[in-house]
Image (cartoon, rainbow, N blue to C red; front, side):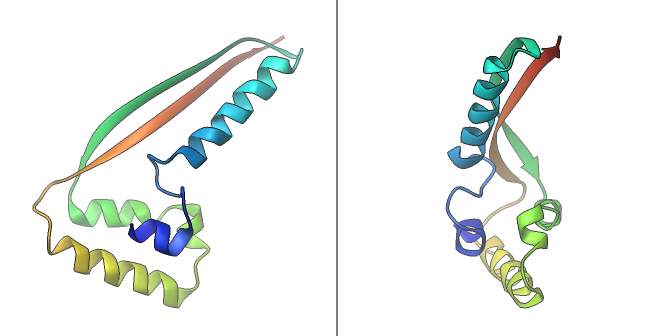
Length: 104
């Protein structure tokens, strides 16, 4: 995908790289005696965006902000080119992980 091309594998919101980090955090909190009632909740949602709103969201991702100006412009150009193939609205799958813990 476009995000993988510019940001590397697993950088998309629905990819496991981010969820793996949440899993690591969850395990570390469970081992830490300073926390109790540690819970992990995974859920998914299909979010609806206009093409403009989704591109604006992508441009706020920290790893996109770190791109050089040239790469960021190329990313926008690629998104706009790809958008010509899609109808409105865009339906984007997201997977979320919520980690809750009570500090003792």
